[in-house]
Image (cartoon, rainbow, N blue to C red; front, side):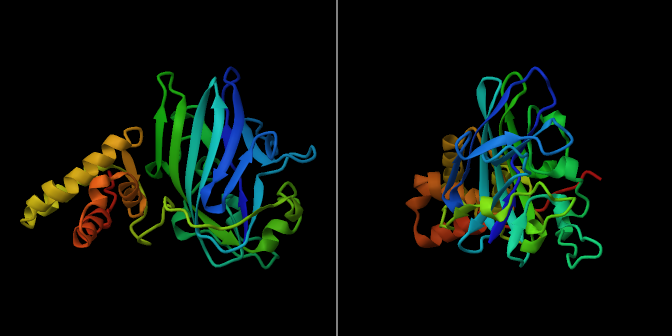
Length: 306
């Protein structure tokens, strides 16, 4: 499977320094180092956009190409940047939908192309996405590039307002391999097949997977979900189960992961953290574990303000 990725940084300030450190994709066993494997170049007319590409030649290429040995639907793209003297981490939980043998995270490449066999590949939930603001991209601060995807993005900033951690859920689409490999005026800066990084798909316990096609994925505070479960179990007369089983597990997770007090709804995200960090959960009986998982993984709906 071919996967085209475009890790990037939008730098809107001339007095802020930004350098690439590395990219890691655990599900593919991939770790690319800046100035050894990859570098930053400027293929876009907008020179505020810093794109990662393979360190080869001098041409500014739009992203990197991966060639995997098996089909994959969920990957985590972790890019580290050195911003104004400190590390800023950008983590993208990417869910790939479609049945083609290639995929790209570039929104405009999902569109149908007239007078070609390439039809529209954009997932339904992405129809209102604006490429300039909805591409997964790190910025100096949250106000630099507001997006309709904000409900699926979580950030932590330092006292100066510089983003030091940005974690987001992103749906990407499959496309025909020929769409990425056939040169045209609109994609003559895409990476060539011979420049792809070969990867082997492997199991990774912390992979975020979508549990339900509907109602979608958003960021939710762990405390908010805990309060919802507490309320539900009170109504069903199972409050003792909450205090003896659910509450200790979630308290433990919050204590171990204080820098990330949220999770992505309707995914395996929170249960992944529970399995990884909660000794209380690991000590439960199998029926108790099933009870916890049922409560944690219940579908959550986003309430609109409109």
